Image (cartoon, rainbow, N blue to C red; front, side, top):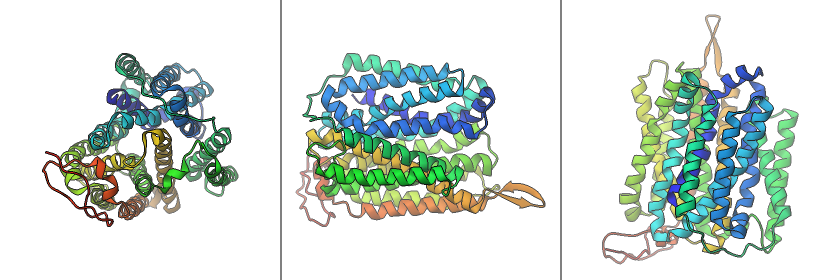
Length: 478
């Protein structure tokens, strides 16, 4: 199960970063302006946002195995079609199809994973999940730079095909269907309001920093999206079988974990987007050089995940690890605000490594603890909500940091010549640090005792539970 899900998640996340490197080349090949290429990115993001809400219901209705393998097939086929596109309109249409598969893959796969692993084993499963979460965003610019430079932009999409085919073959042979849970009637009003609302909001957040927040289409889409989502809350709370199970937020652990992940995604994914711009436009590195400078972040997350899983989580529980992880991320981002064009790049890579290790203290315990008190029947809808808000958090982070860049100005005049204005990037890094600290404050509300069934200790000791969250009620094991 983990192999199929990791492959699916790796493809979906890789696709969000690897394509950005190829955009200038796409513009030249299709003879279109850089602004017209926004449809390639936004079409995918909007389609992703529209279909994530339906994933939980579809998995419960038709079986998660069938939906997951179908989604992987759709994503793989759409990737091949993207690589063969002969015009911008074709590429955009195929990217929308990619988004449909991507919107279904991650929530359904996570549902299967959490239903397969008992709570006490989920911390180990979370350590596996950080591989695509950490590796794909950092590997995307590296692979994208190599493909665009030495092969063709088409390989940015073709790279998904062998991964997808292997995942489908492996899943067909080894993946077992899980028991279905009652799905109820399809919540059409919830799907329309959630899909259109999230789609409009994702579009507005993506275009706002580029066109300006006062632009009529940006303002209209953001306002309409927010109104639809506000209406969605009122509608879903009244339905007996809602598509978006907002009632799950009454569970204090699930609610706190979602806030932590939203802030963490906003800070970290926003930072990765900012770092790519900073290294290339600010420091003058090539696309490949920027990717290699970012890559230590992935190594840090994967190394840190082992430390969190094997040592820290069994001893400390999720709350203190989340708080410390987000504080460490904030420290690394503050350090990045002092980087100039004379700074040794190995110090920059060390800061990226530190942020990656710190972020493992967010990804691993949050995913393990978030579903600790969620029943198997509610896991599908809980996974849908968790992935939707994480996707939205990343978009919000990118929008906020890009807005800070635009407000300060990324260029300045030096001796009558234009030059990179590093202060704009520094201010954006400090803003990302502030987002991480907000997440750390949210992590303080987590009660370790609520996640006791995810914590397995190595020694046989009795640990009393207190409502303060400082001590654990998990039974110890040898």
